[in-house]
Image 1 (tube, rainbow, N blue to C red):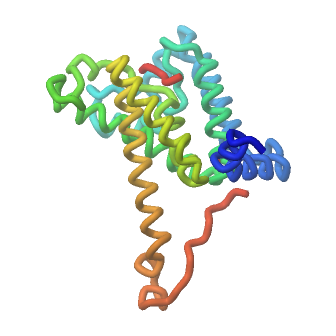
Image 2 (spheres, rainbow, N blue to C red):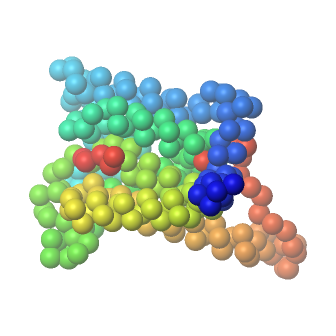
Amino acid sequence: MSTLARWARAEWGALFSAVRDGLAARRWRAVPLTLTAVCLTALLQYAQNQPWGYRFVQNIGCVRADDPLWLALLRTPLSLFVPALDLPVWGALVQLLIVFGIAEICLGWWRTLLIGYAATLAGTLYARVGIEWGPGNPFGLPASDALVVDTGPSAAVVGLAVYVCWRYRAYFTAALVTVLMVVEVIVKNNLAGKEHLAAIAAVLVLCAIRTVRRRHPGRYRGGERRSGGSGSEGEGPGVKPPIQS
């Protein structure tokens, strides 16, 4: 076996096996959330390009930093599935199908949804903080970004990609995704790029929390284990181009 093949097996072997076994066992039944997300995104794309549906989609799933916070939080879950109008919809659909599909097989549907939403929410909230900091701050944003429509699955996709790679010890791939997002911000300093970094930061916090819980399980459990009992944390269910707003 060549050096490159050994490296690829070490980097992606566990992830590949998990995806292969999950699909072999359940086939398309392994990814109900992913298929629902793809269909919902395609439906919203069709609706927002119709005269009768544009305003409706804007009202239920389009977020701007200029919106009241309560309204932004209400719209954020659905905004994940509203494709950006200035990008081809196939990009969003491919991202959802591949990254959400891998994540759902490896993590289970509810963890996939939770982590994807956390990454999207981190980006949405960062936009408000960045505008308050202003363009003079390296992490700030111009006031004009308050009016930018902030939709699409890219923040969730980036966050899930990093989390799944970390979970299956594909550390080089996780680092590569992060570096590419940093390069994106350097080359094209816009709202979407910085939201991707905010999504990665949120996911890294989740990774750190999980690491602490696994190393010190007794501190987070009741009964005998809190008083010094031993035990390991059970694994979760499951057999794992950025969009400009």
